[in-house]
Image (cartoon, rainbow, N blue to C red; front, side, top):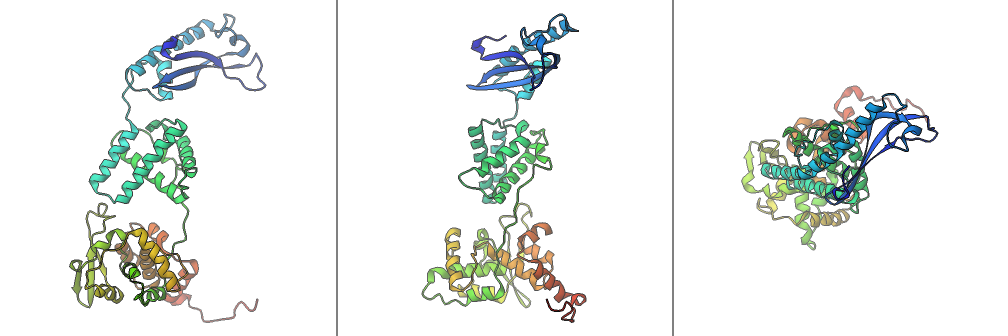
Length: 418
């Protein structure tokens, strides 16, 4: 038995439930109270041994009247004797195992403690790996946010963060932590953080550091609620283009950049790539050729070629094909709210809605196949592409009807009057 100075206390208790009597045979449990790095912990585990409650609870030993009493008591002495050296060995090694491994050491008498990977240090290495890959800064920001919330969860709940503990219990605690956060995360934002966590765990597994597959359980899923995406119809884009902003020059750049993005599917982060040197004259038109920053790594630096519409060329001509520097994304979104009001558009549009407008109008036109649109927008799968579109069921049905005569039935009135 360890002394008080070692800050470990070992005792035996029995598993009890309401209604059980002194004659009830039940499991003998080991209970350890100990301190690690100034924090108190408690661990309870089954010894695998049993005895009637009334015969064990006073002396904490099995009386000789019980069958195999000598063997049971010897085993209890062994387990108790293992507790202190296992604890001291773990403290001396500078690392303390999970409760499960600590119990294994006590039950099996194996005191070697392997130096475990520090998951949070590995998360720093993962961020360094992403930086070396030159991923989009938004991805790095999301992973940094993930780390911040993991550390906050650890601080608030004392939850041990290691590869062993990223299980379904963690999954529930982490979601509750995010929902209770002052940031008031939406389901999609929570889903994005869990997605980044799963990406990190996959990376750590590929490095041989994460031995577990808890995060691959079907219930360890990425929460998601499909949002109502916003796009502009052709006439609304034209209404913005026709606005007389002579007296509102501060809105002109925002309006022109937004319209240009509706014609090219440009992300805000790639606006600076729309310049004269990236525009090529071809037979019967002009192409804009650039390499999207967000998907540059996944696509191995492949460029995207966008055929320019006349509306896009008119915008570019206003600036001699050298577009001015856009305002910040935040200021742009504020400006778009004002522009929508001026143009009589009853929608809360943001800069990213320009890409949705491009994809949705291209799809609805029926003149571009899905693959061609995805080549420009950068979507890898049709599943992701269709999430991005702003298409209602009625619109899809009408598109099918326009493109396929089989569904065109000129026989009105079949249903009669209601």
